[in-house]
Structure formats: structure tokens, C-alpha cells
Image 1 (spheres, one colour):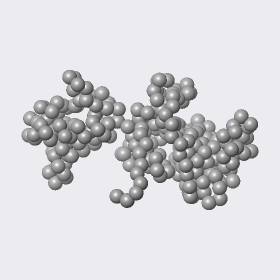
Image 2 (image 1 turned 45 degrees about the vertical axis):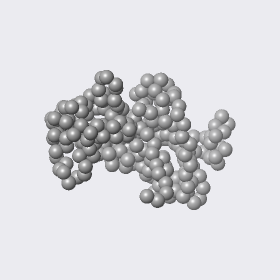
Image 3 (image 1 turned 60 degrees about the vertical axis):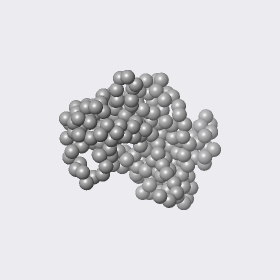
Image 4 (image 1 turned 90 degrees about the vertical axis):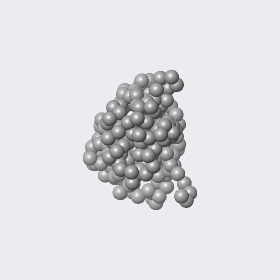
Length: 249
């Protein structure tokens, strides 16, 4: 990371935008999210920023310490401070459109639709029939990309009675979540979250090593008329995190 570039980003915010340590944090996070700085790059030392920004070492240390706590920076004793593998947040409490989450970060979203087809639930899929999906179902497999990096595999089964035109949709221009939310408004949902290793095919699609842990979310959603879909969402642990909150602020 270039000290002068970080200094320019910090100064561009102006003193009205908050405490100095917060402006340093914002300058670094903005650069990471924009792709200006990437994982593994070393950031300027505290002494270098003290001189460049004319701030106290305590201020620089606080910014670096809080960014480390948030997972943006990684400090290696005796070596220096580096940009960590920044994890993109996804909502755990609410069910959101992944394309919206990506666009809100200022990134581009695209999908690769591997298939969208009609299938018959076989006896070897009791987890489907146990949830009320039997007989004919719609099945889609889509990979979502964040700035051309594969972020999530979406493996979804849909009840035809709730979304009869599901297979007619172009999921390169809309997402299954967006379409289902429009035609069968959700009244209830349930998540099960696990840490898993991806299958060989999932690792290939996500462009990760077989040893990299993944986040697996099994999601069930209902409309007022019944179960709408079952989705299996897989994303690399290094590229995402789940977050949520509850209660009054």
C-alpha cells in the first residue's frame, strides 16, 4: 500500500467527517472495497503514518487495532500489518437478494446459470419430501459472482404450485430470490448454518482448494400458501461472513 495514496484518501474526507482514527479506518476500508488494495498487501507502519499525517501514534494504533478486530487488517508480530482476506457480509436474520448486497458494496454482480429444470423427487431425496416437496419440482443451480470472483453457489428446489413460471425466468438478469419474493411473498423463513468442506464440484465452481472451509446455509421459505423453496447456499469461508442483529438500537 502506497503511503501517499492512503494520505490522499485520508485528507480527502476533511476534518468534519469524524475523529482522525475513524477517517484512517474509512480510508483503508474504502480502498479495500474498491480493489485499490488487496489481501496480503502490507500497510504503512505506524511511524510512517505518524509522519505522513502529522497525528499521534496513539491515533494510528487505535485505527489499526480496530481494523484488526473487524477483520480488515492482520498484524504479524515482528513483520508488520497487512490487508486481511476481507470477508463480504451477508445477512443472516433477513432474507435478502444477494445481487442487492453486492451492488450496495459498489461491486458488480453476475450469475452463471448451470441449469434450471423440472425434476421428479426420487426416493433417495427424503429430505425434500420430508419438507413437503414431492412429485414434480423445479430445480436450479446458479453461481453468483462478486466482481468476477465466485461468491456463492445457490442450489434451489422450488414448489411449482407457488411459482409456476420459475423455469421461464432469465436468471442472468434477475435472481431466484428476487423472482420468488415477487410472485410468492415470504411470510416465514428458517436458516441452518454449518461449516463444511465443499464437494469436488463445488470447489471447482468456487475456484478454491479442497481444504478451504465453506459456509453452508440451508434455507427454507414459506408464503401464506405453503412452502415455496429449499435452498442450499455454499460460499468460501474466506470470501464471506454472515451477520445480523435483533432488538432495538
